[in-house]
Amino acid sequence: MNTLETITNEPILFDLNTDIATGFTWGRHLVEYGGQSSYANRPILQVGRYEGGFPFELEFNALTPSGWHTETRLIPESDILSSDSLARESWVGLQLDDMVGNNLGDAEIQAMIELSIQERVLCDFTAFIALEPSQGGVPCTNSGVN
Image (tube, rainbow, N blue to C red; front, side, top):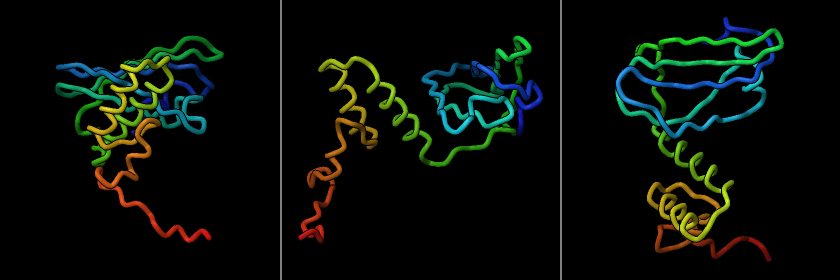
């Protein structure tokens, strides 16, 4: 469904907020890739979490060369495409990536390590766990390098 393509075809700066009829949404991460945030008629990928029921409400605010655009749309559950089984891992990976950008102290690093291990999503501080035999890793003893 091309929900936002009718708003404008001009380059934009935008903010996209989601909410649901009963409950709340949180932990949003805008996934940026090849031009997706330049035009409303291109895919906008946002990963987040929610608790509650449908419909989703999308609030789209944009600044274009011709002025401000604001649009609110209700998206019924029938128009929602279910994600694959890696949705939670995707969110955790984005959460860990956002945490790395902060000024980290020992407590924050420890929290990242614990989240990474708990959710089985590697981050900067746990990448070598994949090689740890006690965590299920299998060391390569024959790398083929002479």
